[in-house]
Image (cartoon, rainbow, N blue to C red; front, side, top):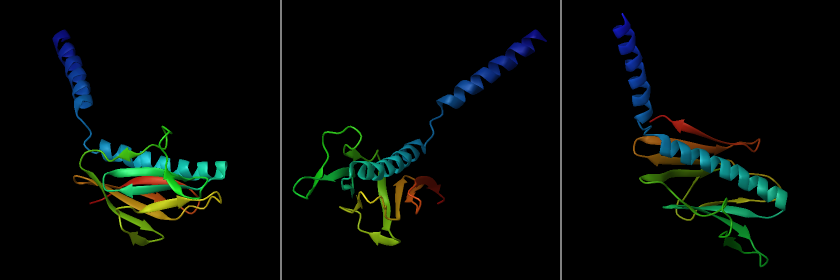
Length: 150
């Protein structure tokens, strides 16, 4: 009987350790989609709080943040750890960007955030292997990320 109890405890322990070792294959795209959703909402809030125009520009290898300078030109933000340029994780790409339900070209496409606080209704679909996630802004100013069924 004692041997049976020990074997059951060992099986439970091995199962819990094994389940922690299994890598969640969708974790990369899920994390990146959630990060982008938070960064877009933060950019909008910074624009309002600072009374400054910000933008985010999407490229094939990632995205970067820009701010309006004293000469009324958008320039890349390079000295801020939050709004630094970011690269997509391995094998990740943008499938589609839609603003106000109209498709945009992906290379160089961007969003502008004004101090007025309005955010365009945007939908960005990311793809990594067989997984797809969509980041969407909503009329109430929130930005969400959710998995898209294949």
